[in-house]
Amino acid sequence: LFLLFASRPPPAQGATQTLAMGESARAASHAGSWYTADGPTLSRELDGFLAAAGKHPQSARALIVPHAGYSYSGPAAAWGYKNINPDGIKRVFLLGPSHHVFLRKCALSRCATYRTPIGDLTIDQAVYAELHATGEFMGMDIDVDENEHSLEMHLPYIVKAFQQRGAALPPLVPILVGALTPQAEAVYGALLAKYLDDPANLFVISSDFCHWGKRFKYTPWEKQHGAVHKAIEELDRVGMRIIESKDPEAFTEYLKKYENTICGRHPIGVFLQALQQCETHMQVVFTRYEQSSACQGYQDSSVSYASAVVF
Image (tube, rainbow, N blue to C red):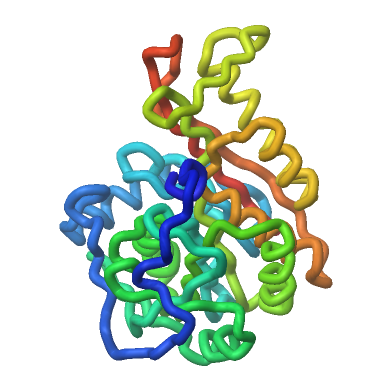
């Protein structure tokens, strides 16, 4: 939640204006803590999450999905990933927020490969070169890359979604999204709109929803909605309905009004701008909403997880 709560931005250590591609591989640095590092166990766990999830009638062109540890948000994320049809998908764009490093731009990885316990994903260097040529993207050093979980938590699910259907693993376009102004979100949305128009590209937008509790320094409680967890859900669902309306300006105003601690607010903002500026008409439908716990009072805390399908 660094981007939400930092009052004085520190320098963007580990991120630079130049992008020098190497041959390095990003380790699955959160395996063994946020999810199991054992490949067969992880594969079975993801199979179980996907089997239990509901499926939307339409195949996804994009997803909004959570990025917490799998014991918390894995089941909710499956309600998004179950809607991937690998046929015809040639690459996956993955947008996630920066939790640990303050950025005013978006950053691209310097790695050539992203490792997971169940299969590795290669970076699409051709698309990276196109993005870098715009002058709008920074480079991301490997320590920043490996410290960030918002991208990594989606990698095993991406691998599994394609492996389950016997499809080849697609190249990846990971983008770490900084604390952008609404104007900057519009710039990046315009840059990505042409890629969103191409049905060969799948977009995955990484975000959890409300982080409620004293440890998050966020404890609003509209008591007319009942218990805390019900008030949190209503707060989140107001935002979810705005996202479904595909209105980036309304989403910005919602965040200003309620200050909801949606950690992926900027990736979502960029994506809403891309939806607004692309030529393809798409719909956004949230298919699942969960909370890590049902808060009853100020002594409690929770994080909300929601999945949406864009088609």
